[in-house]
Image (cartoon, rainbow, N blue to C red):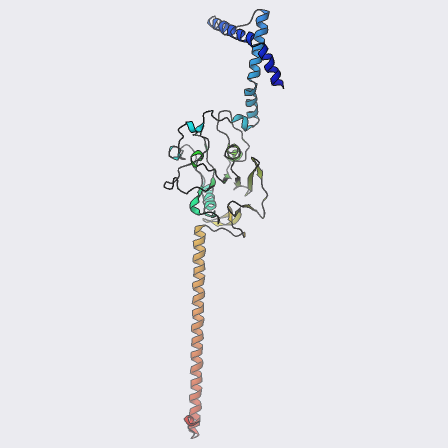
Length: 352
């Protein structure tokens, strides 16, 4: 309603304002040469110029409101897509957008080991492994209008894409507009330097890349966001509900993800020589999903136990046979003694 009234006022005085604007430009050019500031002199020009400045302030109001909303953390007013449609551009692919950045610090040992355990134990029963892409510390390029903008989650999984890029190459990054499939889950393992952004406590600046939370929630709309702190051993699961992340309740320290038919939760145990709480996957029955190394170790242990059982069974059989032989030998010795006694009594034992 207010905008309609303002538009009506503006239409009535448009002609005079245009004249005032042209006069201002001419006088400003003249004043610039004389290093003076233009000021309207006549009452009519002052009134017309005031209307022009008032209208220009009104027209700039949305832009100013955008800046205000940015300072308040309103991402939707801060993040603006390029007006040029992505299909009219020649978009880069994975080969043009690698993940290596020599200026970025490397991961600590915990991040590397935790990501490896999370990857190795993620074996969904309802998806073939060659149609899952699991990665850690790999760039996700998400905006074709800003192709160099990326986020690098500590861990993520994509369902329905091959492990190899175009079925032949190891991926150097994950380019969403090229793959056309968003990740199902992203996970961040909190560190002191990234904790604020990982938890959504930071805001983006105008014309700057959005934050992780904004990318995961607003742009990519990733269904699940997992946060695990090695300092507090706190596991937090956020699920996208009506375009907003909502923190989920854990059941017995686990959270069921139906798309994978697996639960994610904490486990206290030794992995790569370190005993602590680790983030890993559980099956439908609440049993640990073993990593390939754990599976091989368990199979070897089972095989060793089976061989030990077989050896014990064979030893028992041998002892039973030996006991039977000794029993038969004793029975034969007893019969021989009895025969000798009978012969001493002039009785032929063979005739009995």
